[in-house]
Image 1 (cartoon, rainbow, N blue to C red):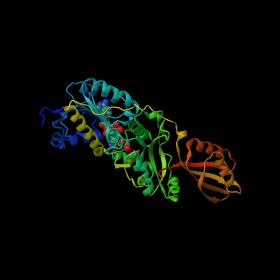
Image 2 (cartoon, protein in one colour):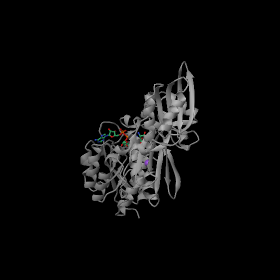
Image 3 (cartoon, protein in one colour):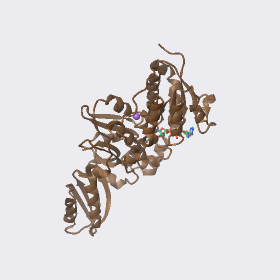
Image 4 (cartoon, helix red, strand yellow):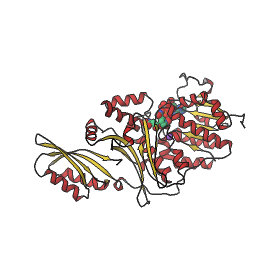
Length: 430
Ligand SMILES: NC(=O)C1=CN([C@@H]2O[C@H](COP(=O)(O)OP(=O)(O)OC[C@H]3O[C@@H](n4cnc5c(N)ncnc54)[C@H](O)[C@@H]3O)[C@@H](O)[C@H]2O)C=CC1
Ligand SMILES: N[C@@H](CC=O)C(=O)O
Ligand code: NA
């Protein structure tokens, strides 16, 4: 039966995502009410610039005082789409203290303070949902938290940042320059307020921390995630990748160690074979593989950024939280009982593509091969191209630990015949 008294929603932030949340809440009001069992009312919208015209939003609802809005006491759900650490963190905890549940899209905040926010939600008997924080519209948090709660997840690997995928795709497929592609991604509403978060891998690292925590039932913070951005990926890297039948993607990879005693989480550009499904993820789309004991390999794919796709995930959470509220219940909270240590990058085992500038003279290849052998790194293929007494040597390794590869590269740099290490890139997805 439909409850007539509406559930009241406070929207914090009315930018790319917030404006779409407000639009869908209005246009789909009847369906949302039917699905929830009560009408949902937009009771207030906190903004920074009140004079801006916001189509479809009653100006009487607009306020610049987000704190007063979350303290009102009659708000059922606060939707936080401001972003950043403060004032978002204080607003969320204040919301819990004043009897509201929270839906957030804020991966930066959740990766940094997720444990404390979950504790605050639990202490006040409120929900904290954040499907939009990872991979935009793609249902990923809820499948990991709920559908796979009976399985044992061993690996989560994928593309979780739309902006960088958009840029890399443009660079690869059209030869577009980095800045031109970034400007387009920003104009399309994919990039973070400060796009450094995207291109330097902070956004993907925050998502990796959230995914690893939920997948492995442990706590992983942003600082635990090894992070390399994509700003140093060049046209030459794409050309090398193509010669190997690969492309380059910025990947987030969270793995349980073979002995199950620790986990790793990392974000970095990597070569992947063109035959791998991740190679065909274009534009701002995301795709994530989840590998579990019983389920085997699952793939999640869809729009990873943009106002409407992200709002879809926010609205899904809003419906879930409202349903919980009507049932006098809360959804699953944080599950961190496994308390697994997070290992450093040295323990990660993968393949490497190394491009060296070397002297083009007899014995160099043997010298280089010896250094690899001395560090226990087995070579898969070597390609050499000579020009005017200099040569470029491309070595692709079999699987080796990052520590062994690091030692190899350090020793290579000391060889007189090695003029420089032009690039090192991991090779994934084989
Ligand atoms: N744009 C996207 O594709 C996605 C964004 N997200 C996340 O969603 C959140 C919002 O992102 P966008 O909408 O893209 O950012 P945005 O910058 O377009 O919108 C944020 C809005 O919050 C407002 N704001 C800032 N401080 C405020 C305050 N104290 N009180 C009231 N309003 C305030 C800003 O004026 C701005 O309009 C961020 O956490 C972001 O990481 C998550 C997934 C995808
Ligand atoms: N800036 C982010 C937005 C979604 O999370 C991205 O590009 O993926
Ligand atoms: Na999602």
